[in-house]
Image 1 (cartoon, protein in one colour):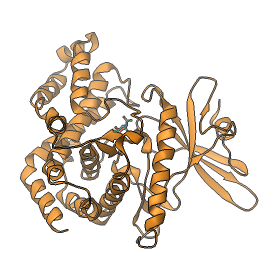
Image 2 (cartoon, helix red, strand yellow):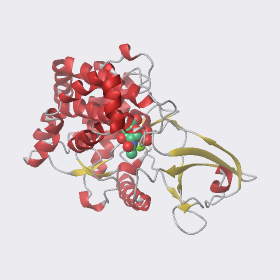
Image 3 (cartoon, protein in one colour):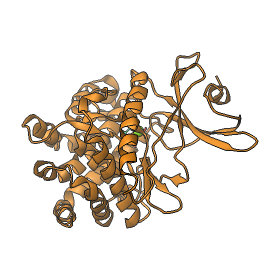
Length: 372
Ligand code: GN1
Ligand code: MG
């Protein structure tokens, strides 16, 4: 079915004026559709959810409505005191009465309202931007901190449990394709060594959870900088999007993920790996914004693992990209066969920079926490 035909399955007033691909997602396919009546215009986001990644896409929609209903109620209670308008994506129903549509190939399509007058950026624009990203994640964590972690289904079992990725990596490494790459490429061998040197570290958060130092809460799962919407008029953060990976987990993975994406000024796809490093100014601005809300729910033990979370999620994403390269690019979308290898090298370079700057990052974290 063509994108035009798909768009027409959703309950929107007026006629479809245009539909075009948008966004830079690595997993789902995203389109922006514009509908017009004689008097108005409505813009919606239509997505084909990758059902190789999400085995039960219906659960994503269930989670989304539970989550947005909770946040909406809470935001309404607080709206008089808020310094901005917080926006949430709303599910656009399908003409068949459901909140999704399956095409003749079995592909899963859903539509969401577009966050109004706002932009998301793949790369940090300024320290002010970083602070807004921190503010949005802090507010989101505070809003969902009052929900029962079991109120959402686990749409992606094993997602953000670093040891699980190591187990999968070990299996892939034994495959014929991976063994051939290992034999023929010095670069691949160097990366496997890098991973081996961090094998023990990969357990740091899960060990803390098992020891009772950290607790399972609800998390966003993918709060990278490009999922935070910034108001075009006020330049204040106004929304967090891409709620498909919201699930029970450790909020540390969220904290780390926002920072690893934000503090790499070169971005996740740069050609210039040599320039990749972890930016301390952006880090400090983010943490100040985050702590404005997070001081209400972060425990002393939570604070103890913040540095590790930044290092770990960066390592984890590098491992996921590298493993997918070895497996033949079966998970992340690629335009070039070596793209996942390249993406992995960028994350591992960033991971090294985070390791080299450990003391400075810890100082930044402490001063931002004390500043509250
Ligand atoms: C994927 O598809 P996208 O771009 O929203 C991935 C995240 C990674 C991210 C890296 C479900 O997110 O975990 O951090 O790429 N999402 C999934 O850019 O695996
Ligand atoms: Mg995502």
